[in-house]
Image (cartoon, rainbow, N blue to C red; front, side, top):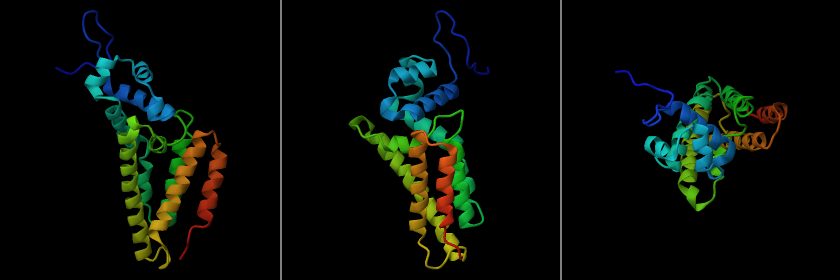
Length: 204
C-alpha cells in the first residue's frame, strides 16, 4: 500500500507528516537563527510536529542540523559543481561568486550562508556541528584547489599562479559575502565586491 503523506491528524492516531517538508522548515530556522539560536521550540513549531516526532524521524538537534545541511548543499549549493565544471578558471570564479550572490540574496530565503553561520557556533553544545561544517568546507576547498591546479597545468593560469592561494581568495570573498548578506548588504553592494575580486584575477 502506498504511504500516506501530509495528512490531517485523526483523533486517536499519531499525526503523520511529510519528513521532507518538515526538514525544509527546519532548514529555514537554522538558516535564519543559526544552530545555537534555533531552539527546539522554534524547530518543532516551524516543522509542525512535536518533540517525540522530531526525535523519531531525525534524531536529536545536531542530527537534524546535519540533515538540514545535507538538504542545503543539495538544493542551495548546486551551483558549486556547475562552477567547477566551467572551462576556464575565470569562469569557475564567475560562476561560483554569482551563484553565491543569487543564493545569498534570494527574496524567498534567509540571507547569508548556512555553512558560515554554522561555523560561527562556539558553545560546547555546538562543537560537533562546527567540526562538521569545517570538515565539509575543507572538502570544498580541496576540490577548488584541484580545479585551480588543473587550470595551471593546462596553461589557463600563469605557471607562477598559486592554486591554493587562489582557492583561499575565492573562499574569503564567499565568506565575506555571506557575512555581509546576513548583515543586510544589498545585492548591488555584493556585486561590486565580486567585480573587484574578478578584476584582479590572474590571466595568462
